[in-house]
Image 1 (cartoon, one colour):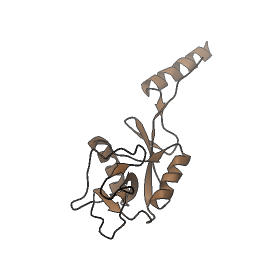
Image 2 (spheres, rainbow, N blue to C red; image 1 turned 45 degrees about the horizontal axis):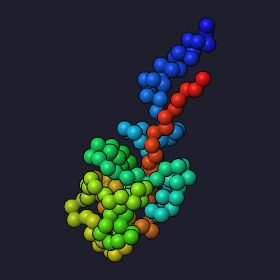
Image 3 (cartoon, rainbow, N blue to C red; image 1 turned 90 degrees about the vertical axis):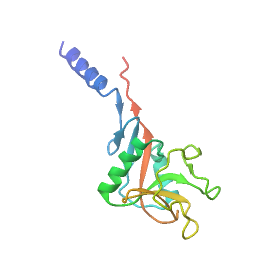
Length: 154
């Protein structure tokens, strides 16, 4: 009888959470989990670190997602890499996770400007807004992965 009560409580908790979880150290927003790094890496290495988690540098497709990420970057007061880049063709910004053109945009005024040449990778600024930056610069970064759907089988 006690086991049945415990299983019922577990099911209620999972139902309340929608069965969706993020790994420890990740933050859930909508249907994604985000990890705000504690280490700095150049953009390419940051992408590789994200891959080790089964994730990718964050892509920002809506104003709601952008506001969520910008709020955290402003709170931390440090710039963070995200997955936007124009490495293949100057001025053609794409998301590294999908290779799709960037639709929603929130560039800082005058950006992207490729000011010092080779500013081919996107970061979020604590100002707030998006900026193009040299990819070889070490910065904090944001990884993204879909929320895990945890199902109870049995």
